[in-house]
Figure 1: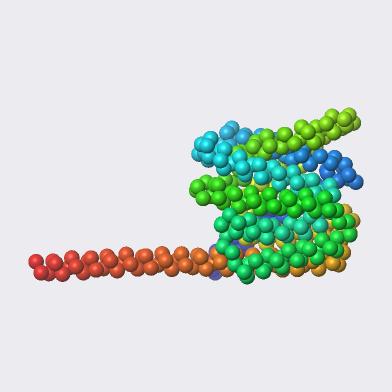
Figure 2 (figure 1 turned 45 degrees about the vertical axis):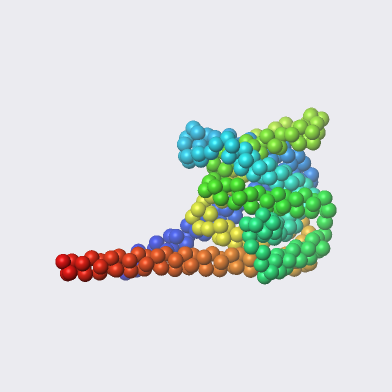
Length: 349
């Protein structure tokens, strides 16, 4: 048994840990989405103020991130000049604040299940914006795949029983801004060799988001909140909601760091199906057969896209290994020739 038994135990432990990370991320993502829906929906907690809710999240996350970075020193801050912060982090913060504002606003008008179906358009948006900014290469095969995803989402929208145009506009806007943010991270930070984990990301980006959200909040929601004299801040509801949002960021870091971004994409599909089932069975949202058929088409498109990305990563990794092998062979050959030459000179002498 010896070594074989130890190897099996090690592999089993790794598998169990991977599934544990996936389960934690799915649970927290699921919780945050349903919790936000509960708070913002007029038929539930009835607090339809998405900017205020996002600001509460950002205040909580930036405060906790500051404590973890500066006071408890759990992670080291990234070396960043003010010039780099203004040119790179501020635009990303602006995009993130608008994305969160719009996505939280959509919960007031749309069902959880339909929002998850619309989110299937994320790969389409990321690829399209990536091609526009020349971070992705245009390929007709990939574009055909993107069109198939879009058709699937279109069919799902056609079959939506409680279709709300304004809600759809808000969610599509959220997808567009979030996709642009992801591409901008590649352009403005990753290209400069800067990587931010969720804690340092919140440390730098959350305060920036808070500032950007403050201006629309003053004109859009502050006057309404001022008139609502019956409202009192529920520390239990908003505190636990904010804590879940912060924990979700840490779960993303844990999942991607211990497994891969592709694992998170696959887990995201599982989470979407669970949310659709929960929305239908518990919240009693109407999910039509056309809804499910359309999302199934989009799901197949997203699955194929993830498969293609995995194959491309494998091919790139194989090419890198082959290149390294060629370089090592070249070095060995050069050393051999050098040694042969030295031996020949020694024999002549």
